[in-house]
Image 1: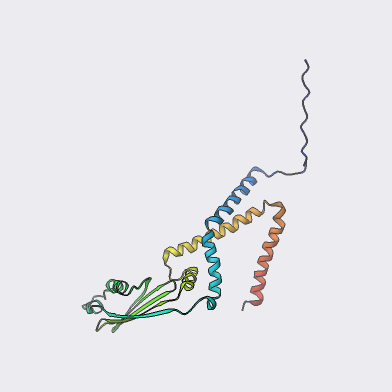
Image 2: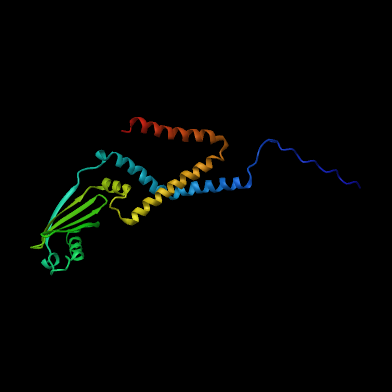
Length: 217
């Protein structure tokens, strides 16, 4: 019995087609996963900043008149004019204003003069102030609520929103950067879309430069 002749390998139908090396396939795979899941994980916060960018850029259209209320009362004289060498009872005064008049937001200023104290609170879309007479303990205050649009605008800017929200702003910037970078890496592996993708990138950048050079004062 004779040994069968070896079957020659079947030539590839695409002899000039180049296959990606292993590391390129890995980079494309992880770039695609990063782009998809980072986009979904940050979708809500990025959509928030996108929409509030519109309301912030057109505040005159979206922001109404603030709702201003007035309040008054009296605190113990010992709180505002203690014994010589001691400071006014800052904590007690602040908590009294919060509990009695529903003042919220973080304390932004506590200014002490010879005759009066000035206490200020600020938060997103919110301000409250009180002026206290140090001789009598009587005070008058105002509270301003600017509405929902003012709240989200201040959150967009990170103004008077506290340290934790500041971290959210930073995290959203990091997410957006990673989404952009992973998309840029991914376009390298899309042969049919690579040229058109980079042309779109160049056109977008060029439009921004032209607008800045011609129309920005």
